[in-house]
Each structure stands twice: as structure tokens, then as C-alpha cells.
Length: 185
Image (tube, rainbow, N blue to C red):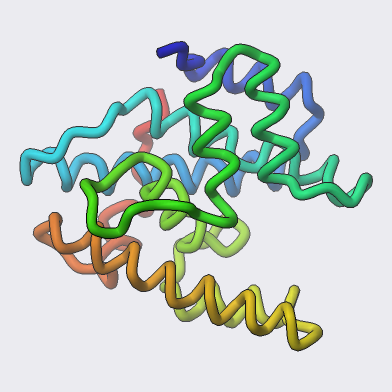
């Protein structure tokens, strides 16, 4: 598995001209992912620290470019990361918006990143419900969008249930447990 380290992630974000506000959001997603990982480790569920760190930091690498060119930022980011030689990260990035997973299987990294992203509104750690209100305001302008957001809500809540069935804390405690932690380096 070829996983970029923290410094390489920072270099990629700079090279692909990711704005600071998107980097700040991505750092927060990485922190939540690593907090969830710590809790899962206590329960005997191991996920790679470097994999979650890198995927969290890079999940929105193509966000700004997609706003300019109209492409799906998850797909474009996956393409970029494949070209950079990071196929495992690319697969997680492709799944952070439209997650394809086995909810009956073991917890996997792409579920953690997907979920962590749904817990960060800009840079603030919020509940899934609060994040969905924000998404509806920003993207729910028509019937197909509202249908897609309802599907996203159902999947996010199912992933939340799956993740927290293996944790000794609740979704409501994520903000308190993760806020201000420096787990990135």
C-alpha cells in the first residue's frame, strides 16, 4: 500500500492549489477520523492511522477545481490521486460523497472518511442533522437534489449506527472528544 505521509499530503494540497479554507475543513475531517479510530482501537477494531490521516486531508483535493470545471470533485480527486500513485487514497476520495459499501461488513476506512466529512460544516464539528440542514440550504434547490439528500441522510445515519456500535461513546460526544485535538503530526 502506497500512502502519502503528512508532509506529502501538504505538498499535494499546495501543488493542486487547494484554498486554505478547504484545507482547514480537511484537517478537521482528518481529526475526527483519527478520533474515531482511537475509539475503535479500544474495541479491538484496527484501521490504518496513515490511511485515515491521508484520506481525510486529501478528500477535497479537487473541490475548488470542480467548482471551476463542473466535474464531480470526488471523481476528479480520485483520478488525480491515482495518477500520483495513491490508489487506496483515491478509492476513499471517490467514496466520500457517494459511498458504496457493505453495511453488514466490517468497518472500513472509506466509511470513516465519509462519516467524518458529514460531521464538519466548514471547520465546525456538528451533528449529522445540522450538517444536512446546511447541505439542503446549499444544494437542495430542486426535487432530484432533495431526493439525493434524503438518500444521503439515510446512508449517513446507517453508517453512523455501524461505526458507533463499535465505540464506547456516542455521536453526540464526538465534538467534545475531537475538538482541539492535534492528531495530525
